[in-house]
Amino acid sequence: MASVAPSGFAAHTSADIQVKLLGWYDRHARRLPWRAPPGAALQDPYRVWLSEIMLQQTTVATVGPYYQGFLARWPDVDALAAAPLDQVLTAWAGLGYYARARNLHRCAQVVSEDLQGVFPDNEADLLKLPGIGAYTAAAVAAIAFGRRAVVVDGNVERVVARLFAVETPLPAAKAELKALTDTITPGRRAGDFAQAMMDLGATVCLPRQPKCLLCPLETHCRGRAAGSAADLPRRLPKKVKPTRHAVAFWLAGPEGALLLRRRPEKGLLGGMMEVPSTDWRDSRWQESEAVKAVPLAADWQALPGMVRHTFTHFHFEVTVWAAMTTRARLPKTAGRWVALDGLDGEALPTVMRKIIDHGLKQTADLRPASDG
DNA sequence: AAGCCGGGGGG
DNA sequence: CCCCCAGGCTT
Figure 1: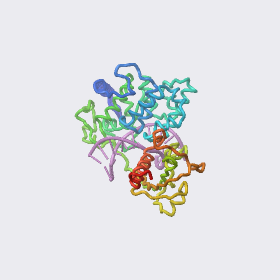
Figure 2: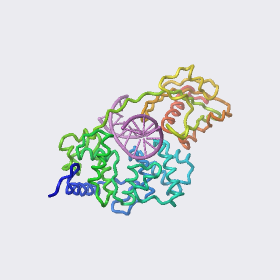
Figure 3: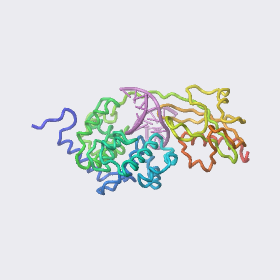
Figure 4: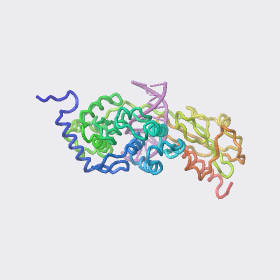
């Protein structure tokens, strides 16, 4: 007698899920820049790895231009390993989670220098590399090397939580969801299966309004049967984000150049460039306090308005002060001058671009039709 | 196990 | 506007 596994599906049901999902993938797979055409040979591991690092916590639409830019500039792992870190950070600017870019560069150097430019072809060895965790190791092993690996990202967690009607809230449910994904992962075409699950999550099994009528797995979905699909996966209540405050100093120097400085290597926006500012703290800054933090004595003016930006775990409110100076010489620690038309060549995260844009707009308003 | 890390898109 | 999404590293 065949017995049904205590959790998961009977073997014949898993086989049917694989057939239906892979059939759906053959018809509906998204054509993405880093993806080999259906039926083609396996994709270049460098391209799979690069795309998977970029896709961590980041949508396909956002990644697209960054991936194309990296690939054009650094076509293989040796080229990327040879690049200066600052150029990698500059190319990464705007994509967020900047530790990914530092780990990407370190990983390229390990592969290029210690592994003769050849990526490990198995999950366990991939897992040892910087920036490669459980998800990415499994994804690269399956997609680039055709290995059977259990690939679980946020999309897969959602699909599986619904398919099996898992009521355990995330993140506690992670181990259970991975074990359930294992029960439906095929021995062959594991890479296609993983990409099919992620495509399904991105285009059909949507977070808020799943398109169950278009889903190839609808007849197998316990969440659909129970009417709870749209409410899964359950999550623990989110924490409230505090607000931090700072005053940023927008200093125009000789020939209109802007004063920028580099942030410390570790921590928030590590290694990226910034507009000099006070500390970022929980309470607002009084003028009398902020003035002690200016990078240079000058006629500082508080600009109208404010820049708001939200990070992963806090809101950020920045008041911008502007001044001009004719002194080109700066204290060593103050930073360096950057021409306005050279800003694209700097490793500037989005919040700093917002601050610079605010300064440009408000100072132009203060001095209309004049060179100041 | 929990906290630290950006940014974009949709309702 | 607020709400939601989503891996790896560190402690």
